[in-house]
Image 1 (tube, rainbow, N blue to C red):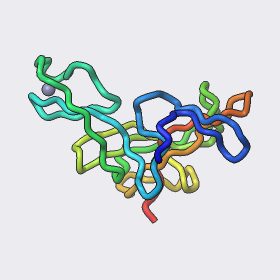
Image 2: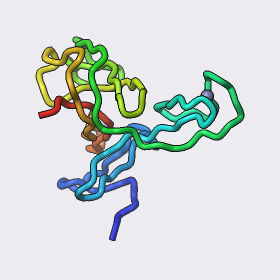
Image 3: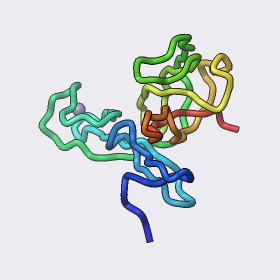
Length: 150
Ligand SMILES: [Zn+2]
């Protein structure tokens, strides 16, 4: 049996909310890894995350096919932010871009699983889904982040 609902109760009986529908599958079934949901232009082969409805490179009317990105990547660039984000992310936090070699794509990402100052270009990371912030009603906003490969 699988629970296809996008809203779950956590251990405190509070709701999980996805930061944006369609970025990743949630919840992740037991034994499975999370994946970012992207798409690829069937004309030129370029991939996009988040998904695009039309390829901005070739503007062909070809189909955009859905793909799940490989969960492993390499930090292209990162920085540390010292003020809370307008969305409510506590400072300091690290974000940047991750190259995913298997899909030839670069994605924006928050980093987790280490001192914000410890992340560096070239570091191998993998995708995780975790709370980004908590709403006043106690709901956890779930987003995607990358953490160092252990
Ligand atoms: Zn294209």
